[in-house]
Length: 223
Image 1 (cartoon, rainbow, N blue to C red):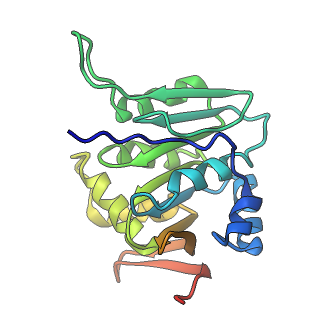
Image 2: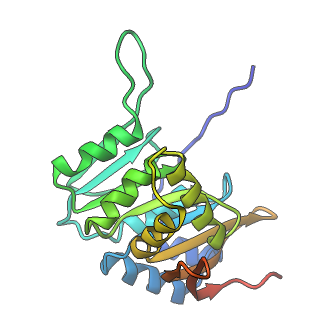
């Protein structure tokens, strides 16, 4: 039998902590704060245990307190200090009650008039429902995905949309993703150190060459 306990820090970390720890630079921190205030759609990618949720928590705290935030996740892990916060949590079928999936929660989210939607992690077909929300003008969304690089995060997003079993052309999906996402942040962990290795801006998608137009905002060179 194996028991895993995820213990959260009693002190909420802030951007100053990330800069002090070398997770990112002060300039990148300012760019990300500006992106949140400008209602850009951000996707945080990285491997297990790299600190995606911690980074999401810190970025979400830049959201103005006057806005209504709706958080959707499988397990309650996101810690946001906001006066107008609504939490949705998925559940499996049990004791005769039907399951409530992330897709169900995303479809119901707009009925609660959110200013911002934060999706804990993109894992499967819910990526299609998130894409629908982003394409209907819902800006300022934050989410995370497992990927080995910022560019691979786009491929992972595409694969998750295809898992929805919706009959959409492959290149139409990629075009919609390019129209919806603004920034991709890659966070990594090496030798016990967590750091943001890439920040890419998504400028568009060329269906003829099947190529995303990505502009590097920041790249951490390997030491």
